[in-house]
Image (cartoon, rainbow, N blue to C red):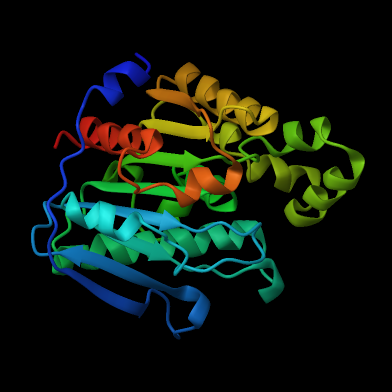
Length: 279
């Protein structure tokens, strides 16, 4: 499968049509309702049907769906419905696998209800930053999470993980200093669990895994290596995938600047979505 070229991406303009944005906050996707199992929906009058699900960062122990920066305006002005998702955290006594189950449950809600906000349930995109990137990549490769909510991966048309460092958890543990390796071991559990929570473990043919654009900081050795590792695993499985290094960014600013005018990563993301969804 061909890679997505940066020159091709940047040659395409980013149309913006300002309009009214409607926000539905704290919508429950699980029963009984809890704060950590809710989502916010940002939609505009001109929504053309492409919903994007955003999964926040925070090391699996912090962060909130409100941390979306410039993204709602950028998505809504381009006709998307943006859904920003909360999920339970390590401090809530859950595992990273259970967080992925929360994300899958939120995606089930999007599939069932996004049409009420102008979205197309058959053209869902999944994105996330850092810990959210790991969760986005995991639910889009390990189809058991979707099967757990009686869906399949055919409803996901594209995935954009942003600067994750745990697409291959055992690789990350093996390559960082012992202090940090111990933190990853504690968060991801026993060795078998580390493999199961690694998206590369689940990259395989015949699973309807969507195309991936993996954004990462150009100068960060760990996220570059992890992004290349995931892209290679996906391509080996016949899935269109590219790892795109973004110059002049840090782990924080790559995320914070998504949605800004003239931001190269934003241009890449929207062109990828347009190509993947055919719109």
